[in-house]
Each structure stands twice: as C-alpha cells, then as structure tokens.
Amino acid sequence: MPKKTDQQWLRDQLDFVCSQADKVSHIEPARAQTYGLHTALKLGALNHSLNVFLPIARNQIDEKHTFGGAVYVDLFAGSGLTRVAETGDLVAGSPIIAAGNRRSFDQIICIEDDKETQAVLEQRLSEFRNRMYTILRGDCNEIAPTLHRYLRFGNPLAFVFIDPEGMEIKWRTLEALSRQFPYMDILMNFTYGAQRVLGDIRGGRTVNEQVMDEFAGPGWPMLLLSEDDTVVNFVEGKIATTLGRPLGDKVLVRDASNRQRYFLMVRMRRTGGGTPFLRGYIDMLRRISRLTVEDVRGVLNDRFGRSLTSFETSRRDD
Image 1 (tube, one colour):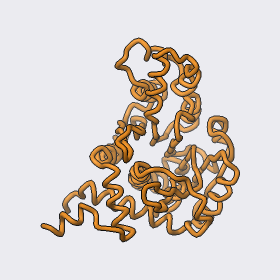
Image 2 (cartoon, helix red, strand yellow):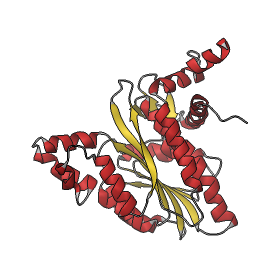
Image 3 (cartoon, one colour):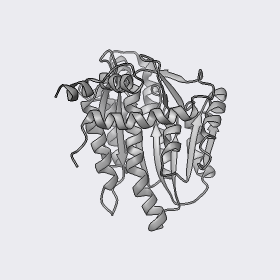
C-alpha cells in the first residue's frame, strides 16, 4: 500500500480531531479557546503521536506487564474545545483527543488554572464514560512536583503534553516531571517568543532575565556569549542531557501571516528495546515541516463543505 501523502495524513488527523469535537460541542459551545490555523497542525501532531505511543504502550502493559499503566499528562489542558480563528470551526482540544483514542490510557491527568474552564472540561470528559480522568486546578508549575500523589497505579509509562501560550512552563517543572516519570515521552510546544525575549536581554532589557531564568533554568546566560545561540537549542540540549531524554527532534511552525510561532518538540529516553516510538514521532515532525496553515485551511474547508482542497482538485484534474 503506497505511503500517504502529507495532505492525506493531515486529513486523517484532522478528521479524527473534528469528530471528537462533535461529541462534546453541545456542551457550552461558546466556551472554547480561539487560536489560529497553526494550532490545528499541533493537534494533528498530538493525535498522530498518541497513535504511535498507545499501541506500543498497551503491548508493554497488557501483554508484557512491564509497566503498571499508561498515563497521559496535560499541563495546560484548557476546555477541551478550540475554535479556529480564521474559519470558526470547532476542533477537539488535547484532553478530548487523548480521551477519544480507541486505545485507552489507564489515567488521564489534566491541569487547568481557570475554575470555569476546568468545570466545562470536566463536563466534556464525562462524555467518555470508559475513561479514567483526573482534573487538577491550579498552576501546573506548582502541581507538577506532586503528580505522583494522584496516580492510580505504580510504575507508569507516561506521555506528557506541554502546550503553554508562551513561556509559562518553568525548567524546574520539567525536572520534577522527569524525576516522577522515568519512562516519559514529551511533546512540547516551545514558543518562538523565547528567542525574542533573549533578544531583548541582549539589547539591555534586564527585566526579562528572571523570566528566562525560570524558563530555561541554570546556565542560560551562556546564550549571551554568542549571537548565534538559540533558546530552543539550549533547552533541548538540557532535556537531552540533564533530564536523560537524548532522542527526538523539533520543527518550526508558522502562522497564517508566516510568523514564527512555535517549535513542536519531541523528546524521549533511550530504551533497551530500540526506538519504536521515535520512528513514528520523527515521521510526524517531517510531515509537519512540509505542511502549512493553507493545507490546514484546505482540509477544514473540505471537511465542512466550504470548498475542495487543492489536493482533491489536483487529483480530479488528473
């Protein structure tokens, strides 16, 4: 069977993401975070990554009994629904994507700081009656160091999704997660804004130094020694070495105005059984690197009956 094109792959991911939104959109539909088309690329990437992670995890847990259970951790969970700014379409947020997968996590842990957003997320997750979930309200940087208290089983195999709007995630939080979850894969939205903050510091705006200190952790002033050094490479290197997650890669995602918005980063540990997770993650990153927000627009337009995608048009012309 021929390998899917990037556009076919994207269509498959977003079809699932939209279908899960359909299951919960009747619950306070006006309460949804609004983000641009580029966010749909990230949600498609998450869905693909969970489809890589869960089959292997379930085999390790159910057949080989290597781990006590699979846990999904979402540090910036949101309401479970996202409205695409440019089109108005509702797509599933990250917790709903995790809950909707046909292979189940043994526990889904969501952290959300806003009380009303937490309440509507709980209503939406309750639609998935065979899924075990725990929703914690508060700052993920304060809650993350004690996550082990909320686990319903020992020896977890973890998938952690980190999706802040900016530089809200702190380095100490990544350290705390790594201590609690030795077997942990990370999918992270790493804001390009961190590089702009570094540029401000290089330009003499020292007020941003505390932000960078909390975000990048010890050693970040080394970035001031060279104009070519980047925050994302620095933090990625620390995740690889200090946190023991040497495998992975990243890709830059741009918005509809072609502005650099974030890096989508995957990091994982090296395992004795090879790297079955990694191959699937890298395939996803390569596809994302070749896709644009206009591909997203085309898929959504097609799905919601607004027009044919350029992909379908080209096929019919053939």
